[in-house]
Length: 309
View 1 (cartoon, helix red, strand yellow):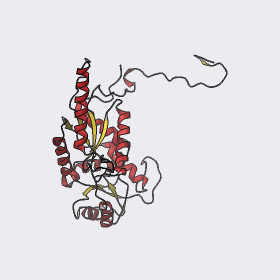
View 2: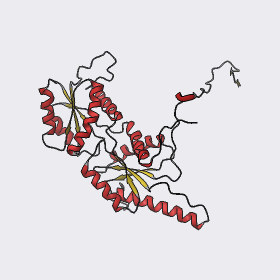
View 3: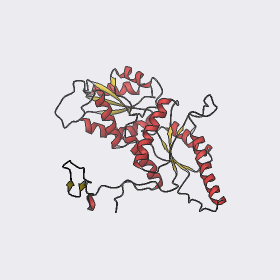
View 4: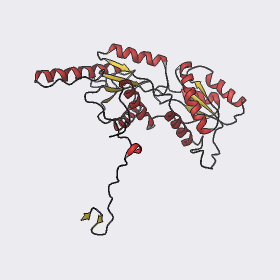
């Protein structure tokens, strides 16, 4: 049996670590308010088991960031039924309508049974687009889904630009052997690129937004980074020529994409145009779950990481 000062039998005992106090005390995570709006992750692109697994992983991280969060997935191009007639990939508008109906049913049940009707906190749902940057066409379709539903829903901002996305791009490049994992460590990577094409979708607006994250990535890698549009003919090749013209000899393509938003074959075509290797898309990089919750919280005015008292 152990005592407060140590083990009675001579075996080591893990003692609880004292909680730090004062202004350096680690913030406790916020908790979703009772009956708070749902977070609905709007997944673009052709629905698939892969995109569903990606979205579920991101939301799993989100729930750990904000305990009590009601988080769901809605597909921009969803709604096709499976063999049982049930949508395997429910459309965003249908998910939002279901949330509104559930809220109304809970309130009606409370009234019918003489209970206190739960107070609504904000809208029925906050929709967070699963996009690293703005894409005018996709965002218009998401807004239309909000209007087509019976829910009072609010659209949050896309996930970028953000320093955590620059970090994720750096990680993906280093995983592919195209960048040093850590500039502070004095080792070399023979295949490290000396010029990065930051490839995105969504046209000129997306390229400009990606350029902000590109500057953060350039600071991390100490090499030039220029954004290009995968969905604009000639954009990637022009950026490759620009980088080579300024002295970069070994280029790499860094997809500024989460994954589902890019049409199949776009990245392969871009690599051939630029004649360079590419890193993987951001995918389920852990920071994406944090950013999704941050955009949800910002839309509702929920403070994140407030110091505990």
